[in-house]
Structure formats: structure tokens, C-alpha cells
Length: 242
Image (cartoon, rainbow, N blue to C red):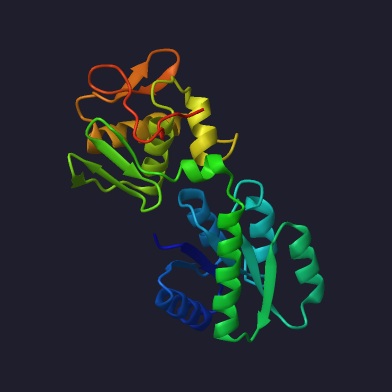
């Protein structure tokens, strides 16, 4: 599985350089040229690591870190000018994991990124590692590591939110989850419109369950993932969700 990296900088040449070198290391790189764009991406997608420039027009990297640190668990590495020591210290206090000063050697960038990704993987709990195992229920197979979904062996294209929503439902197969539970688990926040859960359930059904055979609406309670016959099937215990 390719690690997903978000690189944020208002210098287009740095973004291009970082994207090229990390892509050559078999990583999937998304880029953002402003703090506002970074916040939008972090709201809609999941990443394994974030490279974040401190000094940007508009929302600074420090503010981005402050806003997302409580709901983004991946490592955050700051990129900073050498004379920006106070901001570096502040950034580490806001929850950043490391920093690099500009200009930086590309070899060091790759080494730092790799080191943090390895540490992140080692720090996963057995429960988290279990939830990375592929799960199949009925005709639907979901692979969290590859972030792929198939139905009867046919690939199904899902958005990041739809994938995470389906993963949450499948890992908790047989249990009724309220809109609030799903919103908290998938959107990683307690604030916002829980009505967006129903919107994404509708999109998910259109793509993978048009007959409502798997995703059941439990009126007044929430949603439950079941098989056609109404009982859950498990693959390697992966469907045992809490």
C-alpha cells in the first residue's frame, strides 16, 4: 500500500520538488498551496503524514496544526526558515512531531519521512492492526490497507468519506450505529451536521448496495450492516467491531 502524504507550501517549486522525490519513493503525494486548501483536504481525506510550511499567506501552518491536531493522528513535520526558531518551538508545542529547516537535502527529507512512517506503524495497537486486515461480508470485500472495495470481484470506486463510512459499518457488522456514532468515527469530530451521514449513506448505497441488501436503516436508531439473509459473515475475525 502506498503511504499518503500531504505536502503544504505556498512555494510551488518546493511542492513540485517534494512531490517528485516522495513519489519516486512509491508514496502518494497530495499538495496544497495554502492553509485553507490544506484544511479542506484534511477534512475530506486521510493521510499518513503531513509536511507543513510554517509561514504562508492567509492561514499559517501553525494555525493549521492547531486546528487539526486533535483529530489528525498522523505525524506532522514542519518546514521552516532557519531564523524561525520561535515559531518552530511553538509548532512543536502545538503537537507537531518534527521540523526541517529550508533549504533541506532531499535525502534527509526522505529519511525523516520514512522514519516517522515506521514509528507510526510500530505504535499501532493490535486492535488497529487488526482493522487493517481485509474483510469480506457476502459479495463485498473491503481492503483497508489498499483502500479498495470490490463487489463480486468488480472494483467499486468510492470517495474517501464513503470508503471510511463503509469500513466503519463493516467492522461493526451486526451492530446498529447511530448517525452520531458514525459521524464521530468517520468525520473525527463532534461538531458539524450529522445529516451528512444520511447523504453519504445514500451515495454509498447507489454505488454498492442499490437493493438495500447490506446497509439497513434501523428507523429511529441508525444503520446496520448485514448480509442478504440478515446475519453477518466474518473473514478472519475482522468483522468483530466495537
